[in-house]
Length: 111
Length: 111
Image 1 (tube, chains in turn yellow, cyan):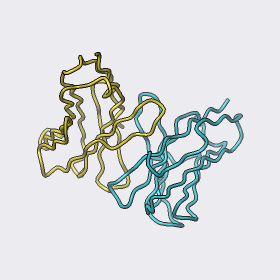
Image 2 (cartoon, one colour):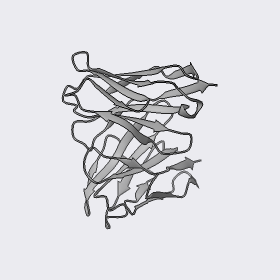
Image 3 (cartoon, one colour):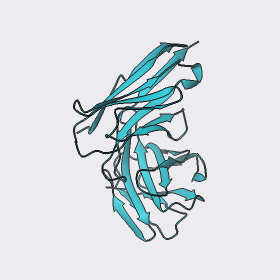
Image 4 (cartoon, chains in turn brown, green):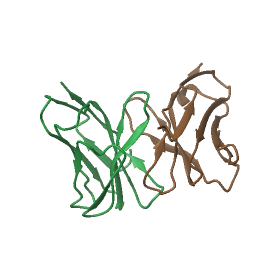
């Protein structure tokens, strides 16, 4: 059973546009929600993370929106650039050790 | 990738052979993790260790074994009991819970 469901599977955005990736979870005990960026052949790198006590967190062009009642959170990439083309994973945990990852979104930003 | 090294980058083995994947970190991190990544399935936790000489099973530990004799090292052995060993294997480490820095990964192919 997938603990964290991620959509879309792939996304194509024009340069300068907004990329939006969505995740949903069921376990209300989850208390930490990170997003990772992965380039081909590389390990994932932590991009941004949020705790459920806030509804939004912004770091540069990257924003997490968190809706506790709907059990959903999303990643918004503003002014998307070709260098943002990568696979993005959402994740969730309530133990700090057992992370549950989404299935990933392949983002392509067209120049 | 920081101070986490995984070797080799590519590994080929014949079916029925055990194989050990190396993971070393020089970040003085207490916690270390092993994940398996398959296309369309995100990352799944195999084993994790919070301190030396102690480790815990993740969701898919069957057919794998680990050791943590040194803080810096957390090798993963893929045994012949693992039914589908071909995958991309990722090691991660962190100072504490909720924090994970990933290595560059090892792609294992078993034929």
